[in-house]
Amino acid sequence: MIEFLDAVAKNSFLQHALLAGIFASVACGVVGSYVVARRITYVAGGVAHCTLGGMGIAGYLHEVYQWTWLSPLHGAVAAALVAAMIIGWVILRSKEREDTVISALWAIGMAVGILFIHATPGYRENLMSYLFGNILLVSGKDLYLIGALDLLVVGIGVLFYNKLLAVCFDEEFARLRGLSVEFYFLLLLCMTALTVVVLVTVVGLVMVIALLTLPVAIAGRFATRLWKVMVLATGISIAVTTGGLVISYQPNLPAGATTIALAGVLYLLVLVGARVCKTT
Image 1: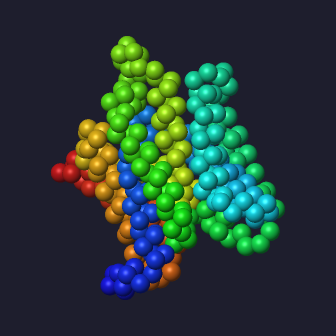
Image 2 (image 1 turned 180 degrees about the horizontal axis):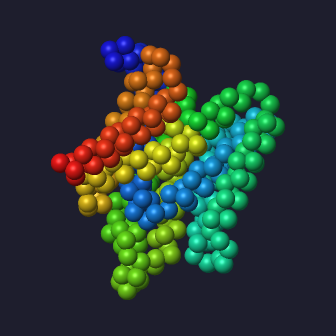
Image 3 (image 1 turned 60 degrees about the vertical axis):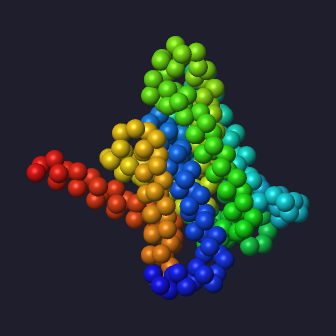
């Protein structure tokens, strides 16, 4: 622990990693609570895997056409929002099975991303690291974008708290109150898409769903009001992302996988503790 703190004081990349983890945790706590309440984790999974396509295209344009202002995270934002709107339209309007469309977008997004990554000349490890996450690669430029996305989703989540709460728990009541359920549902999907982009930098595409849901599931064991779940889930997320960095630093383990493993162990301990308390 002391060695890690000394390294943080000396190395900017560790400082960026800690800040990225905190930003991601705040978005995770707020938006993850809505996602779990509305039971749309499968949508978040589809959006997460579509982002690889946007990252691959952005990386290709950056390297081949010298669009130096474009980063993989810009491509991830665009792909995530497009995927969220398509899925939202299918759920609300189309007669197609939503699970089929989500699976198709999932596969197409991954395939497009891999094809463009393969076609991009030069060093491609940075792009491939987004599959499993590498929080240590977060740059200062990425951190500004992550912070902006974090402020946006948290601001929307707080500003429209009552409306999103109604849409998540009782659509009929929301309609009777004159709310545009379709609009707020699409807004929630867009918030989820942006949160997924933030979480991708921490744990990667493959493990986004775990970080989006596990802290909320743990928090739900100790709080019943949604805003309390958000606050507690944010604290738990900060603890596991920071703990993942600390634990993985000395043995040089993957920080993203360590973070998810830590969250999983904590969740299992809470479940076992709850079961023991019930039987005693």
